[in-house]
Amino acid sequence: MTALWSAPYDDGMRLVAPLAAVIMFLIIALVTACGGNGLTTNLPQGATLLADSAKAMRTVNSTRFAFDVQGNAPGVQLRSAEGQLTREGSAKGTAKVDEGRQLLELQFTIIGQDLYLRPPTGPVQKLPLSFAGSVYDPSIILNPDRGIAAALASGKDASTETREQVDGVDTYRVQTTFPAQPLGTMVPGLATDKPSDIWVAVQGSRLIKAQFPTTSGGITAHFSDYDAPAQITAPV
Image (tube, rainbow, N blue to C red; front, side):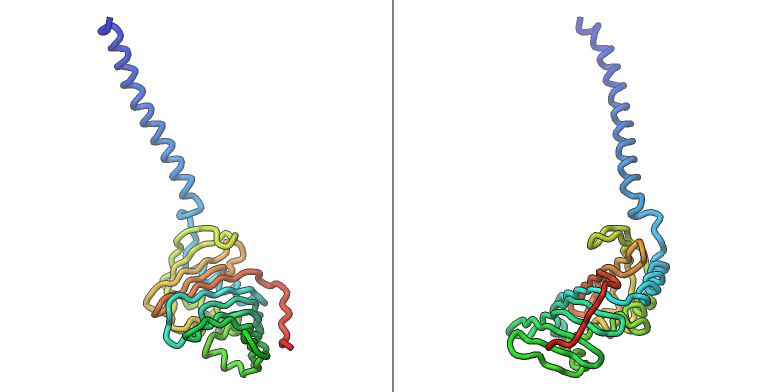
């Protein structure tokens, strides 16, 4: 009796095994194809994305920003900053500054050539804008000729890495290398021999995020709320 039933059973197993393998192959192929579409295939050229982003950033009137400094660059006291700035160079926000023994949080306002600082204790101090250079001066960022737009236009060997969500925005991640200028005026200690990563919005081409390498770490920048109303006035 065993011999009578063993042959059909063996034939069935020989049919099921190849069929299962074919089904698994089709599933894997389908998943791979779906995962790749829109992520790593048919991506725009990196140089094109840089040029489009540079053009878009030249028209920005205002933005919110957030910077985070990794590492301890000699002479760079800034650890983080966030706030709002305008095309004209006005800015307002808070900054955390490393004073060696402690981390101080300062409120700052920039209007024209004047810098207003409010320390943790004491009254507001009015200083020349040149003083900000010893810590960090964000007023140049939206300058169409010397700011981030000019820096994006100077990127070399750009390659588009992927398409992904950043801060809730659909973006392209581009890896590129920047020369010392003009980006060096905004990124103290920029490492020009290492690539930077930037994230450009799929819609509108504006800069959403950037990671710049420095000689002792890196700086991460986030930008949002483009062209939102900005009322920056001198503190009282």
